[in-house]
Image 1 (cartoon, rainbow, N blue to C red):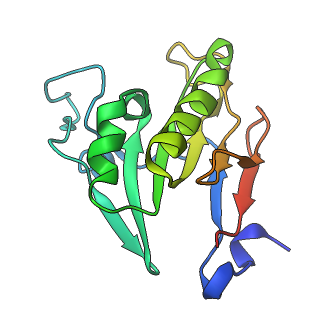
Image 2 (image 1 turned 90 degrees about the vertical axis):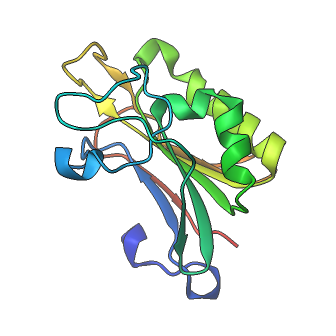
Length: 163
């Protein structure tokens, strides 16, 4: 059965993280609340760093959002966790030689804030310096245990039901 058709605890959907190269459109990306991008001014496509953390409420779960470099900055996770989150979810891209970074960052967030962490990590070649990208999307329980991890190949997914 496909992971997106499984029900989680209490009828909640499972978390999943995909390594497929399916980024949001430029229009949607310009509204994402990324706090730290490696650039400080608006880009030609209109996107710009956000000013504060954002939490989405989905089926009773409070999910704090992070994008790429946000996950490397402990203060971003702390500010997001202060909003009362159940999980910290991020879209990231690392080079193959940096594959260990998202595991390290996820374990730090779980240790510091006792929340679920899910990363959707780009796999394949971005054409922009990450050839190949690390892939290896993953999900970590609040105790820091990696409960699901995808491989480096495109199309791989990691999923679990949260309780």
